[in-house]
Structures are given as structure tokens and as C-alpha cells.
Image 1 (cartoon, helix red, strand yellow):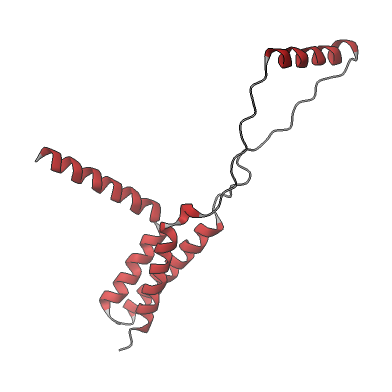
Image 2 (cartoon, rainbow, N blue to C red; image 1 turned 90 degrees about the vertical axis):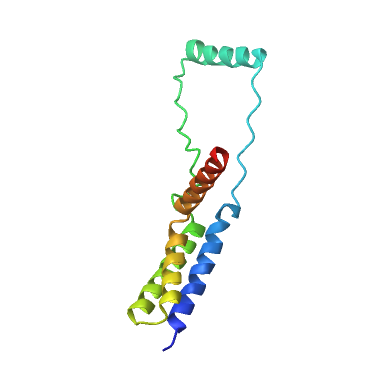
Length: 141
């Protein structure tokens, strides 16, 4: 039997996991630097201007437009969509290969690694918990 489908699924799933492992390395725009704190002289000057506009010139203060600080961040980054789609493709190819009774280990590996790419954040949390348990077990022994 041909193991081509399982092998392709495994390669795609491995590519997806490698992309997921380096997902924080895509470029984010640097946040703007904090503006310097105003001095007492600047605060007094602003208060005087505001008082002059309100009392003497009879201008009504306008509310500043709301600023969304996270407007540049999408809920799902395109990079994340790519490795999720590749992981799902690897999983699907692994399942299809398993249904065709191809090599069961290659099919299982493609499905498992594809799911690992999709759930990458949870995999990292599980690894961290396992490391903490290992350290605690070695300290108590």
C-alpha cells in the first residue's frame, strides 16, 4: 500500500508545528514611547487656556475621540491562521490515510502532530505543567 497520503500529512503537520513554535517572532509595531509627564507650568498653562475658552470666549469643551489602543492587533493574526490551517490539513490527511488503512503509525503521527499545531498554546501549557511536576517530584525525593 502507498503511504504517500500519510507522509504528506506528516510533513505538512511538522511544518505547521514548526511555524507554531516560532509564532511570536513575527514583527509587531513597537508601541509609541510614553509622553513625558507635564510640568506644573504646563498644567497651569493648559488650565488657564481652558478657563479662558470657557469663561471669556464661551466655547463649549469638546470630548476627545475615543482611542482604541489595540486597533492594530487582529483577533486572529494571519500567521496564526496559516499554521492552524496547515495543522488541520495535516490532521485531515492523517485521518484520511488511517481510513484508507495506510501505515497506521504514519497516519497517527500526522493526525497527532496536526492537532498539536492547532492547539499549540495548550501544548505549551501542558509542557510547563509537566516540567513543574517533574521539578517538584525531584525535590521531594
